[in-house]
Image (cartoon, helix red, strand yellow):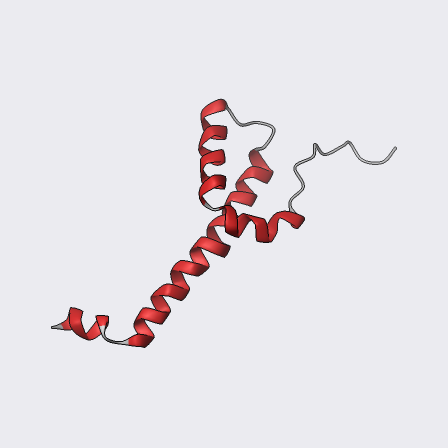
Length: 79
């Protein structure tokens, strides 16, 4: 009874699609970028394999934020 009411309500369905889209395109890619930025030079091979797998899975969201990621080694400042 309640399940059929939820399934027939277009606002709940639209909200669910927006929530899943937000997770897939924004929230999880930003978390992955944060993780890669903090751990890039210190990852072991299994962690790197897991991150590369998640990058492959969440590529459409990651490409949106790609211009803002810098994985270069930080220098010691200006001399």
